[in-house]
Structures are given as C-alpha cells and as structure tokens.
Amino acid sequence: MQRYRATLDTVGGCAASAIAGLALMVPIDTGCAAESSALQMTLLSVTVPRATAVGVIIAVLAAVCVRMFGTRTAWGTATVATLILVINHLLVHATSASLATANFVDSIAAGVLLGAAGAAALESRPPAIGFLLGALIGVTVGDHIATIAAEEGTKSLLERAFVDLPPYWLTAPTMGLLAVCFTLSPRAGLASYSTALNLPFAPVLAAAVAVTTIDVVSERLTTATSGTAVIVAGTLAVLAAAVIAALLLPERDGTLTLLAVALAATGSAIAIAAQAHWKLAPILTVMALGLAAGLRHQAPVVAAAAIVALGVFALLAPGTRHDDSWTALIGSCALAALAGYSFGAVTTRGTAGTVLAIGLLFIPTAVLALEFRGCDTLPLHPKQAVGSGDRAAWMAIALGAGCLAAVIALRHLRPERVEQD
Image (cartoon, rainbow, N blue to C red; front, side, top):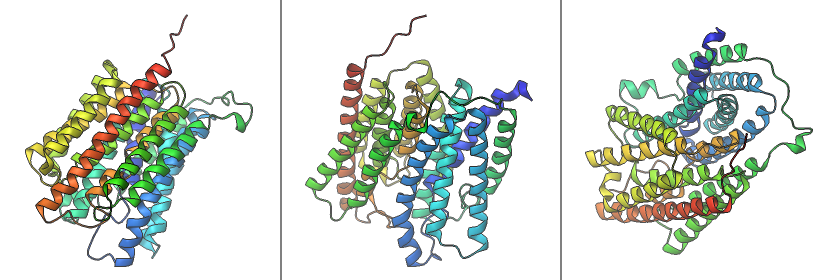
C-alpha cells in the first residue's frame, strides 16, 4: 500500500476538500422548500452565512495548529471531522434538532476537515493539486445546487442525490479513504515551534479580518435599501480588509487572498443563473484546464486583470445573470477557468494562506447581496433586475480593480526571494 500512498493522498485530499466545500456552502436543508416553516427559513437565512464564516476561520486555525503535529495527525483529524459530519446529518434526520444549530455544527466540522486536509495534502505537489481541484469542484457544485434549490426546489433525481450535502454516498467512502491515508502516513515529530505562542497565528488574524468584514458588509447591503454611498463604503471596507489580510500573510502569500476576493465578487455578479445540470461538465473541465495552465505558467497579475475584464463582461451582458443562455454558460466557463488558473498560478509558502483563499470562495459576498437576499426570488421586473445587476457588476469591477492594484503593490513591496544553493 505504501507504493500507492501518493495516489491515495491525492484522491483523499480531493475528496476531503470537495466534501468540506459542499458542507460549508449549502445548508443541511438546501434552500427554500415549501415544507420548511417561516421561522426555520428566517433562521437559516440569518445563521447560515455566519456559520460559513465561522467555519472558514476555524479552517485556517486548524491548518495552523494541526500542521505542528505532522501529516499523520492531519489525516487523523480530517477523518474525525468527516465522522462528525456523518453523525450530525444522521442526528438531524433522526431527531427534531434545530437546523440552525445543525448547520453551525456542520460548518465547524467542515472547517476542521478543510484545514486538516489542507495541512496534510499541501505538503507535496500531487496531493496539493488534488486538494485544490476538489475545493474548486466543491465551490462549483455547491453553488449550482444551492441556486437550483433556491429558484426551483429540488425535484430531479440528480438534485435528490445531492439534496443532503455532503451526501452519504460520498462522505462514507471518503472517511474510509482518509483513515487509510492516516494509517499509511509515517510518524513524525513535532514541528519546530518551542511553544504555542510561537505558532504562526498571523494567518488566523488575517482570516478573522477578511471573513468578518465580508460577512458584515454582505449582511448590511440589500437590493432595496442600499444607496450609492453605502455600496461605496462597503466596497472600500472589503477592499481594505483584503489588503490588511494580504499584508498579514508572509511573503507574497496574500496574492492568492486578493485573487480569491476578486474572484468571489466577480463570480457573484456573473454566475448566479440556474444552469442546466449538463453544463457542469464543461464548467468543471475548463476549471481543471485552468488549474493545469496556472501550474505551468504562473502569472497572478494577468489573472487579476482577467478577473476585472470578466467583471466588465458582467456589466455589458446583464441578462446572463438571470437566464440559462449560452452567454451565461460562456461567462461561467470563463469564471471557472480563471478560478483554476488563479489557484494554480500562486504557490503559497504556508498552508494557511491557501486554506484562507479557498475559504473566501465559500462566503456569501456583498455583491451577491445586491442581487438577491436569502430565499427571495430574483427580481420579476426586467428593469429592476438590470438595475440591481449593474450595481453588483460595478461593485465587482471596483473590487477586482482594487485587488489588481494591491497585487501589483504587494509584488513591489515584497520582492521575490532568490534561494541560493
């Protein structure tokens, strides 16, 4: 079995990050079903974004702490976190547990899973690629399922297979696979941190600043009540938080955080339409190709500029956000390719930097708040939809341009070190 350890670690990292992403993005009750009470849906709409934010911060904290104890402990922690996810879902369906409480437990366990799996997989190249690919798959599939559930309800066979995310048929084999990775991992001593006070907690502070700001701003912005001044203030707050987080991370690790903030904003402005299920195939394909291209040719500034250009596309083609047209598919594919390229083009020195950037893709953005809120349907009147979409697109462009400037400034502020033999 040791001969296949790298392959098992790669598949395990991919499955673990995908499951963590699905659990963080989509609540246990996937959306706005008619049988859900008004109180349940109100609690979900309020608590789910906060639970996701908590899960992302815990993911970064887990990545920092678990890494101190080595790869074996990281795989073991990921296995336990997956087991907690399974038990939590079983208890929800077997008892009258609160959905809000269950989703907080889900997010905490998913955060530990994401951070621990990242600490284990990001140590070597093949498992790291699997981990990144799985996380991006989780974002794409989770966003698709959540949008379908909110707009149409879960009806088809495929939707029913994913109605309880992460599904049992995926979590159970993954838990076994992670246990095998834990068993095959060699025992290692502690990392060179003399005390807990010497742990690199700057990434945790960066996560707290970025995640809290994005979550608060997205809660404050609404389509009906947010004026231009409020939107500008929210944009500046998110951009400032992203820059502070990037500066708190070591070396140029903050570049990936800035790209993630821009990607999340642009993705919320361009890809909220309920795409047909078969369109997931080309979207996931171009995402994998983008990741491969980023690993081969690393140009983060080009990626940031392309994200701004995609925001301009969202502004010029506002109808793509509210239909299932081919133009919407092109925009979604471009976004997926850019996401893959961005995460392939930036290699962070610390595990926590990558985990933080991935986590930022799961948090509901302020741009999304300008489109629609909670379980409300999209605007029925075209003029209202276009007006709302224009404000969201402008905010995405502003955040993308600000992150582009910050990426360039960070490269000048922290020149790349040339390692000598």
